[in-house]
Amino acid sequence: MKKILVTGGLGFIGSHTVVELINNKYDVVIIDNLSNSNIDVLNKLETITGRKISFYQEDVSNKEALRKIFAQEKINGVIHFAGYKAVGESVSKPLMYYRNNIDSTLSLLEVMEEYECYNLIFSSSATVYGNPKSLPIKEDFSLSTTNPYGTTKLFIEHILNDVYISNNKWNITILRYFNPIGAHKSGLIGENPRDIPNNLMPYIMKVATKELDELKVFGNDYHTSDGTGVRDYIHVVDLAYGHVLALKNSISGVKIYNLGTGKGTSVLELLHTFERVNGVKIPYRIVERRPGDIDACFASCDKAFKELGFKAKHNIEEMCLDAYNFIKKNTN
Ligand code: WQD
Image (cartoon, rainbow, N blue to C red):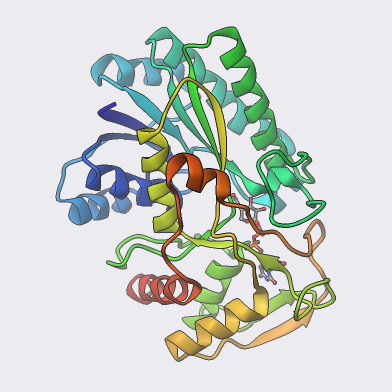
C-alpha cells in the first residue's frame, strides 16, 4: 500500500501524520480546504521531509474534485482527518457540523468505492465514550456523546460498520484519539489555533507567550487527585506513528483502537509540568466547570499494543517542551 491520500493533511494531526508516512516510505497526497489550516504548513512539510508533496486545495465533500484526484493519483489507501472539531462550536452550530463532517465522509466513501479503493483509516475520538463507567477505557465500552461534534464521530463509525457489512472488501481502521498535544521536534509544525483556543494546551501556550493573560481552570471539584479534570495526553508524533502501524497491520474488516498513553494527567499537573520544564510562569484562576466536561478519561492501550505493536514513547515533559518550542518559533 504505497500511496496514501490524507484528507485534512495540513491540520495539526494530519500534518504530523504526513511526516511519519513519508519517513516510513509512503507516498502522500494531501487534500485540504484550508478552512482550519495554513498553506505554509505544506512548505514546512516539504522542508521536514525533503520531499515534494502533491497537494489539492479542495473540499472533501466535492465528489468531482475527489474523482479528479483518484483518476490522477493511484491511491491505495486513505486517512480521513478532514472535519470540524470544536466541541463548543458544534453545540451552537450543529447543522454546520452534521453537514460538513458527515457529507464529506459520504462523498469520500462513494468515490473510494467507485475507484475500488477499500483501505480507510478514520480519525475518531475518545469523546464517543461519553462519561466512562470505569477507567481505563476499553474499545468495547458503551458509546454515548454529549455534543454534536462527538455525535458526528459516532455516526460516522456506524456508517463505516454498515459500509463494511454491505461489502466486505472494505478494510477499515477506526482510531479513537485521546488528547493529542506537543509538536514536531523541529518546531516547524504544531498546534496554533487562529482564535481563542478551546483546548487546554494551546491555551497554556498562548498564556506562555503572553498573547493571553491567564488560564481559566474549569473547575477544581472533580473526583480527581487535585480536583481538576484528568485526561490522557498523547504526543502528536506518537499519535501520528500510530497511523503508520495501522496501515502496516491492515486486514479486512472494521478494527477499532484507542490511541493514548494509558496515563491520566490533571489540568494543574500539566500546567505545573509546563512551567517547570520551560521555565515559564502560567498565571491561572479556578473558575466554574465547563458544561459537558467529565472528571477523568484515560485509555486502555492493550489492544493497540497487542494488535498493532503501538506504544506511546514520549512523556508529559517532552510534550510540554515540544509544544513550547513550537509556539516560541511561531509567535511574533
Ligand atoms: C482538557 C481539560 C478541561 C481548556 C476535547 C474533545 C476531544 C478532542 C480534544 C477533538 C479538561 C480543561 C481546558 C481551558 C481548562 N478534540 N481546560 N481550561 O475536553 O478533554 O477533549 O478536545 O478531537 O474530542 O472532546 O480537551 O483540552 O478542551 O480539556 O481547564 O481553557 O482541560 O476542563 O479537564 P477535552 P480540552
